[in-house]
Image (tube, rainbow, N blue to C red; front, side, top):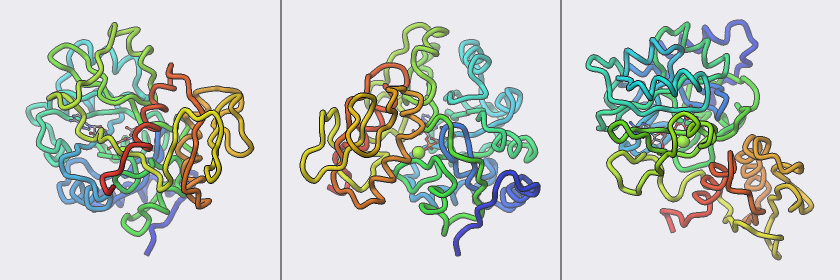
Length: 317
Ligand code: TXA
Ligand code: MG
């Protein structure tokens, strides 16, 4: 049986979502970045259910979503810099990885054996209402089978996981379209663990120059596998035009005939379209996709990060 998709404008939507969370079930929820697969963060069976539904490796920890800084303070220990970042960018596409608080109620599985926990306050009103009225933290990875393309619509969630979850709340297309930027700390020094929907320069305005994570470093983000966000089709990046047998994914003046991430060359628009267009090309049966060059600045850094992972050799290769 496939999970019902309920419009978030239905007056019973939040209550039905909460009812599923209370019994340890799984709900697809809209956030401003991508759709998440939500479960009660304090319920070990529910958290284990997320790993099972996504077929996610158990070494890859989950983000706890909260509705207020007070809720986050029950879970993790803030440094003063972390607090500044939370005050500047929450709610929004920023995840902070911090030491677990002494009596952190979030199930240990969500930390995957680390002594840290990732926390984020989403900006989407449906996610906020759900967490606030549920009254506690909700773990939510992107709502896609592990290794696949993240979902930016309720229909993407239903097609990837519909038969393994209980409910999907439809809150429209995700506005940002890329997962949150993840910041960890090496002592007091902030480290960019995952490029994402909050551009590096916005964060650096507060932190100064951010160091990039060294591969294999103790603070690294276990989820950042080389091959990830992968459609079935093969990608060729920085292409100037499609060759025979390739579909074309354009940007700006590298327009081609079909899909263009942003005809105006706008990186915000390109980010919002990226995952949906990769899915569309995949769905059309394309086996090879040539992608136009994307400038490596602002949100372009995270777009190029996802494209590079989507183009990387697969673990099954
Ligand atoms: O925008 C987002 O972040 C979305 C929405 C639903 O909030 N969520 C999301 O979750 O992208 P997920 O599970 O697909 O990615 C979480 C990333 C992974 O790369 C994971 O390894 C990293 O955050 N992460 C989580 N907890 C961590 C921890 N304690 N230490 C280091 N990295 C952590
Ligand atoms: Mg993910």
